[in-house]
Image (cartoon, rainbow, N blue to C red; front, side, top):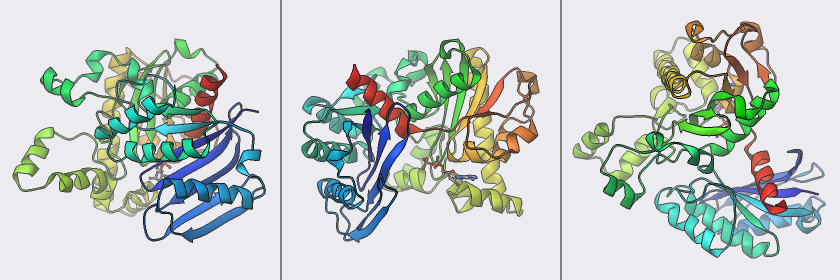
Length: 396
Ligand code: ADP
């Protein structure tokens, strides 16, 4: 048995799944949320398919995991009878230190905590969950799987910013890139779908979810990506601005914005939400279709930005074999795929409208047979990839 308990934790939530590493099959899953608030909540789906849902105070991550254990018991299979071989912890920021999945010990956990300086919204929550989970499962191996690790193969020309190197070095300022777990699994599955060796392919992967990023992948190695020091850079996202002239931030600071106000503006009140009043892509699309000018502008900027990165990565990679759409928007919205790929015949991209519009949950080709670049939709599965990587490390 190769069952992995995959943990994706935030400062106030723990998402977990029991995944069969060899197949990616889910055996149980759940979410503890509003940790630390007066009233928290757990929703759990057990291995037998039954559900537990209740509201109660969950003061900290230790209490959150205790609720998870209780829910496993109530749905028929106590957690220690599930045959879990290891835990896989998803970690957003691994800095320049972690280039692959890493067995968690005190030193690694402390380093993840320190890297909270670069990822204050993510790593502190990861750390709390790691401490709680290691105390609860002291005899199981715990593996940290990093969103940044896949991008550690970028050349210096892609990951350095052109600022004073001394300042950059003291503050760790460089491009790290994120969504690496998704870009890795999607690029591998795209190669499998095409029946070609990963090593032979130049790929542009577009992860378009609530967060969004593009990645240029050469032979299975990330050579450039749109997110930067933080997940705020690059594409237009649900609530994040993506790329913006840093001078605009200086301008707003001088105009009296505080750092926290700027943070909120750029991370929580920008992107599709900023333009159109909602970050749900379906609602933006529906409003645009109904003639709403703000929603149309939101989509126009969204698509324009993606096309910019496709152009950049076609140059970076010296052409591409495939462009791959993934995540909530990329997998489900045919119109955005058509808009992103419109008028790219010169570059070798021709979408087949029927293939593009046929709904499916599987990996599929949406370009014509004579399109030089194969355009694909490949569902992402970050939890299955975390389980696979954790198992690979533990099994040696
Ligand atoms: P996250 O970054 O939170 O993992 P997801 O990959 O789940 O995000 O993507 C969420 C986005 O996908 C939302 O904007 C949602 O509106 C969009 N989405 C989900 N299903 C559809 C659909 N059927 N059509 C269009 N957009 C969709």
